[in-house]
Image (cartoon, rainbow, N blue to C red; front, side, top):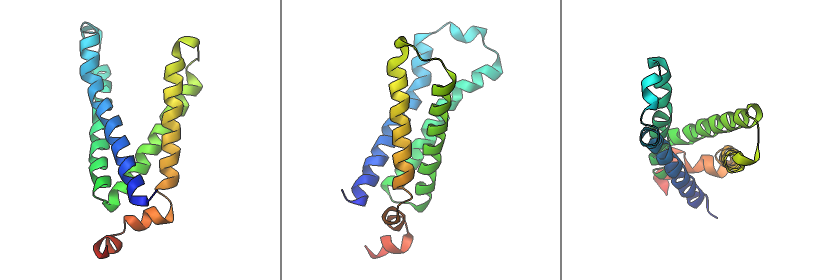
Length: 137
């Protein structure tokens, strides 16, 4: 596959996962309507993290679609955070048969993160994000 095709594919994956993060808060509000009443304001702030990360991911996706140089660094930050978060979740939460799908999802996200770190550090990908190369193409 060409580098630009893989960049577009990565941007599409980042967009899809960012949209899932944006849907998290409204879904949780519908799934557990009375849950909010017992939470302290500091606990409520944690529910703003997924939409904030989803927004950051969408901005990064737009940058990837447009081959903006800053988006290459941004997707590496996202990949690193995903890998760290998923590894910590797998290591510190017990694994049981009821959570097999969740465990598999975390492994898939780790693999996506590792592939992004490798791909976006490759020489050809770095060249695709340099302003001089894009202006001449």
